[in-house]
Length: 102
Image (cartoon, rainbow, N blue to C red; front, top):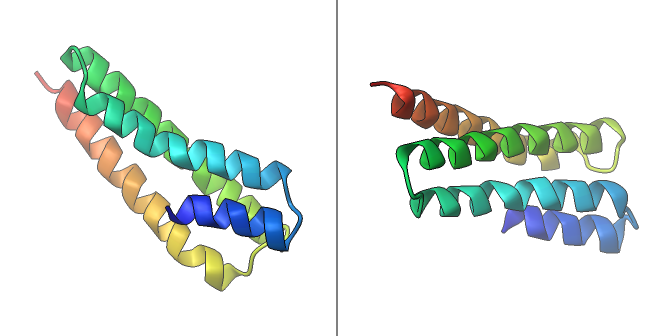
């Protein structure tokens, strides 16, 4: 939800459409892939979906950093979103690694 609201803010208040679309796409893809993983048809499918979610979280982190570095957002406004991304990356990576164990 926070990513959707961020994208809306960037578009409406900053007139920024390129980066807002990118962060919206990658940020919402994380949840979509986790949701798909919950209905996975196999262990391999589960791992694949969560690995994709992890990659999307990394991409989202990139777009958030870019928004901060280009002064589209103040560092204080991006900080908690970046922390959330880091936590998601850690969680998803741990789940993928654990799921790959025999």
